[in-house]
Length: 127
Ligand SMILES: [Zn+2]
Image (tube, rainbow, N blue to C red):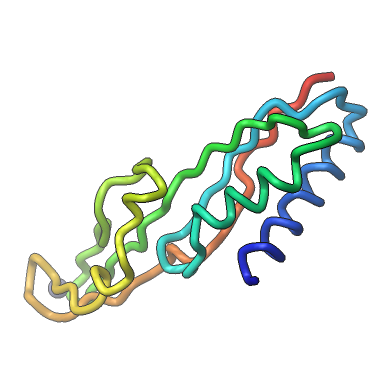
């Protein structure tokens, strides 16, 4: 499962960071998920919960911020191509909402830029 290997990678990074800082516990982590990553946030969070059941990150709070791709047009228009950020996991819009978007200035098809990264934004540890 794609989400499981991603969760393992994230978890290893979090644990390594905690150990490097001699942390007693990991309080919370904040993830940034681009809406074009095809990552199922629900599954990812579930895998992370399973991984953090024991040990230093037990009970860790996980926040997810969704990042919309940016729309760019040859006329110079540049704007947010998606809906508002910080929605709940189950509100993650399907990918087709990002196809066929047109420029509000000239009406041509927008090129999508960004929105395809998965980043650990913050790791809050207790020292
Ligand atoms: Zn345009």
